[in-house]
Length: 443
Ligand code: AMP
Image 1 (cartoon, rainbow, N blue to C red):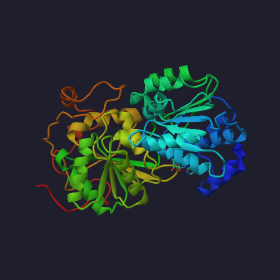
Image 2 (cartoon, protein in one colour):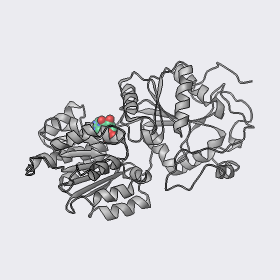
Image 3 (tube, rainbow, N blue to C red):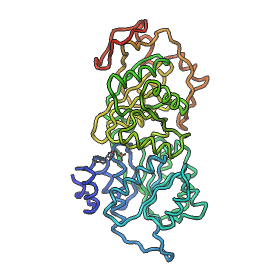
């Protein structure tokens, strides 16, 4: 199957070929014909599957095939609106729109919060056909009377599950009320909770359902490993892994913004170049860190879940869960940063005694047990007692964890990583020799 066989115009196929794609990914070959036919689409696909081109390419085709007159004021109407949960994702999607649409006379722009609104206002004055936006800033523009969404022909909700998780549902409903009733709707979601299903049923009109990979299935190309380690030796182990393997590009996840900042400082002390990306950083700082990470000048990017959502960093070789997420779905999203669109990657989780319940929740969700290892010199203390974990973010779909409730589960370790399965004393190296070093013995 080729891109032109899907019915895309030559200009689009040329741009895609120049990008180096030879054939469509599964989500692309299934979603593109549906979008081209004008039907509503409900797509189950996570980041890394090529979903962005799955909606961007047919939208470009449809819009460029139908000329629309400028309004009496001479302004081009907004014809496609793409909503994303995060600023980074919005920026990446719009970059894709521009890249795939480079041979077409269509204008696009991105609007998101955290940056000066004035350049966005100026740009909107000229009019754009394709607008990519995060919901909050979009509504700011609407409130100022700068946006007319009454001519939107196609609406995309990208990563809809995360948008609902992040509490955007009311904003989205307000935006939907501004759109014409007659339009095509495309909803992309990595997971299908009941909330997403009921939201989709109110939004979509007889949608075609397209799903790639099982729900919450973790990419087969990603090697996943669990390293058990004491909580206060994680940083040392991370430095050890980075240095012994000369990892040049590693995305590290922490649960909290504060934890991300602290880890960056500690890595600096170990002479490792690192930057953090999280919600308390200015948009400029986030963009700068991401840019450096992408161009290879930043070795380690430390991120929280929300900041990292949807980041497109091609062929990322290593993802480290410095702390396991308390929301198991976040594990799937995190490791989706590696092993993307055909390239293989490695996802390593550093797990201490406090996180065993998180681990068992993750294994339940992905329906498999993950290989567990212990690195020589970093054997966890078998007498260590679990401590409550401060959780950084709460999914609305998850029961509240953290605080005192952690004590409850922590007292009852999961069946996956019970103390009995951990060594009762420092053990001989297990598994991957390339990771094991004889550098130190804690005794
Ligand atoms: P996405 O899931 O849209 O974030 O895309 C994931 C990655 O796959 C991005 O780096 C894209 O550039 C890449 N990609 C998208 N489509 C293809 C394709 N047909 N062939 C190879 N790589 C692709």
